[in-house]
Structures are given as C-alpha cells and as structure tokens.
Amino acid sequence: MFKDGHSPSSALYTHEDELYLSAVNEQELLKLLADRADNPDYGYVSNLFQQYRKTTLGSRNGKPMFERLAEIVKDYNNSDRGRAVLQEYDMNSGKAFILCIVTNLMCRVHEKIQQAGELCYMDASSSFEPLNTSITLFFTSCAGINYIFYI
Image 1 (tube, rainbow, N blue to C red):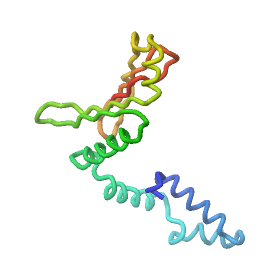
Image 2 (image 1 turned 90 degrees about the vertical axis):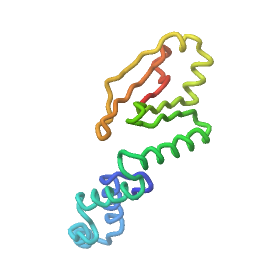
Image 3 (image 1 turned 45 degrees about the vertical axis):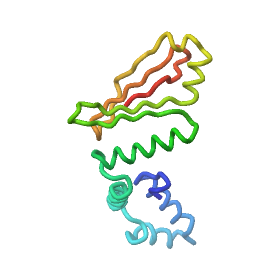
C-alpha cells in the first residue's frame, strides 16, 4: 500500500475497511479486529512505513536523496507537465538547495497575460521541518495564480 502512496494511517484504515468487508458477521469482525496478527496497531504499521521509506526512498538527507530527487525532476521535465530545475546542496562550494517548479499553467499565464510579469508576490512563511528547509512561494498579480515555486 505504501508504494501506492498510502501513509501509515491511510494504509491502516484501508486494511481495516477490507477486514470489515471480509467479515461474515459481527462476531468474526470482532475477532479479526482484536487479533494483532490480522489487524496490526498503528505503531507496527508506522515502523513498516519507516522501513519502506528508508529502503525505497533512502535517507532524508545526503547523496541518495538528491539522486532520487534528480530522477523525479527528470521525469517531471519529460512528462510535458511543466519544467523543474534542481540545484543540489553542496556545503563545500556553498551552493544552496534550490528546487524551482514552473507548471504549464504558470507558463501560459506568463505568455498570455502581460501583467503577470510585472508584479510578483512572495510568501516565505512556510517551512519543511524534517529537512530544516524553507519554502518560498511566488504569486503573480493575476488572480493569485502560482507563478514560481522555490524550495
């Protein structure tokens, strides 16, 4: 389920829903829900998710993370949904971690509405806590449509 994008809680809820649907009567349902072999608790599912994330996605920081992110940026650029540019963090050269995403909608707004290039609002109040990374959103003056997204 994690491969399909489930979080630990959504995977647990989906599994419990399947147990509800598979039970013939209430007595069997109570037995299934009470048995940890059939219905693991949240802590167990969370540990499974952490193991899955570590083996599949790698660590939260370091070379494997940037390699995986570079693959995702390449796939995004090849998907014709927009453009993305990645600059990896490098402590030795002083390069900051920058991820810039420009969707096709953003490009169309910039091309079709000239005022979109004249004014840009910036919101730097968001952050991505696990990596101690700030998120900066840029908006155009046209109906608040996102223009550029920097991480």
